[in-house]
Length: 234
Image (cartoon, rainbow, N blue to C red):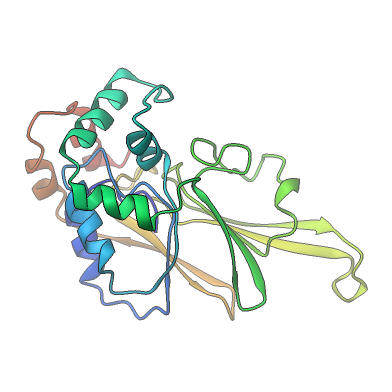
């Protein structure tokens, strides 16, 4: 799951599914853009699934460091500063103590070496991973989970290696689950992904939630853009 962005209605729709999962990987940006950053942090702090990876995104990084220089627009800076002003002490404590502050984490699932990064190895907070990029730096991993782009992807890369059993090729699987709370793939539904590590099956879930209710919760302190984009998923 990635990029919830303070969208409580989307999170509630996700929780209502009662998915059977062994664990959850959180890829950052739980907060900002939406009006419910504190509520999202409260939910995640008592999450129904074991969290095996919980990294900050660029929004947690910027707000906790009080550095808004890398946002690409004035409305983005203003929105993050507003979120910083209403973020509760409990939410700040959770981010400080439970979210990996450099936006990147290496871990294992069984024998599989995994990388979780909000952005990319080149820029863990603000970068992105795309199939057409040079991805040679990811060769050692079996799975690479990323977020930030708000656009889901699944693809495999095969690297040359000295392993006759596998015809001298090494596979890395790249997964971006999309955004639960601020999708940008022209689909306004809440989006996340389910992975079966035994079969390598990946399912990209898209679920309806009450977009209009979430829009009504906006109170005018942030640019109207963040409210209206929920309707079309852009």
